[in-house]
Amino acid sequence: MNIKLIIINKKNEYDISNLCGGDIKVDREIAGVPSKLTFTVYKNVTAETGYAFTEGDNVRLWVDGYPMFNGYIFTRKRGKEQEVQVTAYDQMRYLKNKDTYVYDYKKASDILKTIADVYKLNVGEIEDTGYVIESLVEDNKSLFDIILDGIDITLSNAKKWFVLYDDFGKLTLKNINNMRLPLLMVTDDGTVTDFSYSTDIDSDTYNLIKLYRDNEDTGKRETFVSQDKGKQKKWGILQYYEKAPDNFNDAQIGDYSDKLLGLKNRVRRSLSVECIGMGNDEVKIRGGSGIFVKIDNCGENNINNWMIVEKCGHTFSNNLHTLKIDLFDF
Image (cartoon, helix red, strand yellow):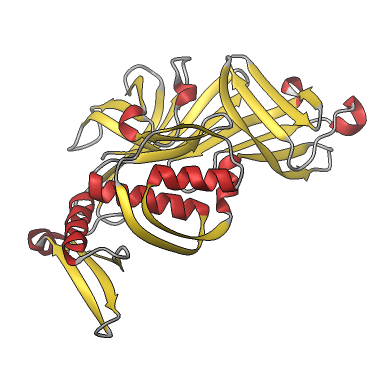
């Protein structure tokens, strides 16, 4: 396994691939957080090698030629042995900035492009999300939340799920159906070293959707309800409550509520896997990736279907690539 780790400080480019000790880790999730790279430089690079790097410097990682990470140093910690622990994030870290946006008749993909332009973020492939959001007021929210709100509204209304991520220095937005990898994850080939499978109605399951709207003309709060009474008898009442999208009429709110119920009124099935990378494109796994999973020894519900990666931790150490992956069905 060939690891190439580069730091760019002003006009200087340093190859520190052979100066790192311990693990090199890359963590990727499906939504709301930037990808993170952590590594430790075991020499005092300033004193012993003449290399100098600081906060804000660009860091790039390749694994066997695959462009794995492109981001910026945010944290350095120095120990008594003069080792330097470095944490870097990709440019999605800048989406933690807060702002206020008011927009009409925009698609989620348009919102992303506008924010990227204002904050001078590099963009790559932005798939057209299709669904037009009539109106939305986003007050004092993180840029992440503003973009993800648009993605969530698109999912609820058009049943199309888009994933935002940074692809080696370029913001990318893809339909989750276009993120499947040609990988088969099974327990009997020796690559899966451990797994945990769970089913729950605790994390994101609701059988009663209640949306509200404050009517300025009457001064009263109006509610719109979609529910599954059969599931309520089985599970008890699990209520999802939120403000209806601004400027939706009654019919649109009712339709939105029904679609939310369709998405959330189910048992969530989750799988956590620890495995060994065998050079079969495992480095490409990120939040949103689709992987076909076949596990026969997980209780009453054997798995034999596509699952979506919620988060994935890659660790590179001693010429070995190991992964910890959380997946769920959808």
